[in-house]
Image 1 (spheres, one colour):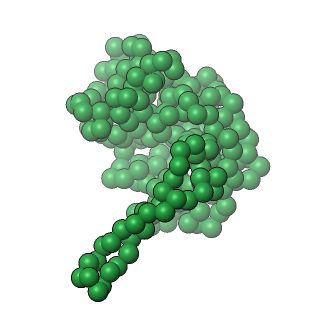
Image 2 (tube, one colour; image 1 turned 180 degrees about the horizontal axis):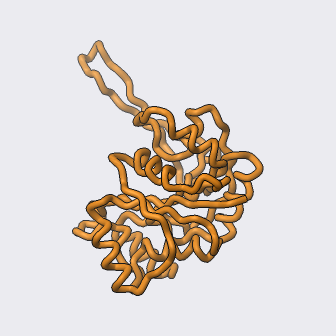
Length: 231
């Protein structure tokens, strides 16, 4: 089945504490986003890669490509107001003959070939697949309560919840093309936190597959240090 991946890279890098968006920061001399694109090109030399970048960042990205002699083939799409709109713009650039579409965070450069293949293979059979990993830390659920007698509108408490009932979600999230296209025809809501939530809202179930713990989303300076050691 013909495959595509939409790589979404619209971060501003505010949690990094610098002016350079996080996807352009370097790991061992190479920008994070280049590592990510090369990961998917290594998985499938013939898949269509759609890179979604805000217009304001595209000129800087082109300069980085020239600087690093980066010539991996991809299709460029403009970023949108939200991640939902960015992915929707990316879908519009996917070729009509593509049967499976994955969506991946541009700042997750350490997904393995095995996980990528498992996501696409599972989506080919079920229509929708996302990688997840176990939760190892104890979780507490914050409960908001209204205490009208005390004149308080927001009183909070917390309770421990069984962590074996929860998973941490990664990307790529992969779907049959017709399922993803139809799901993204819905109006946007704030409940759409990832692509699986959009597809679920359209009435489709999601298959979970094992991810890899190294597939971190790089968002903080500490993540950059971890990424350097992983490279």
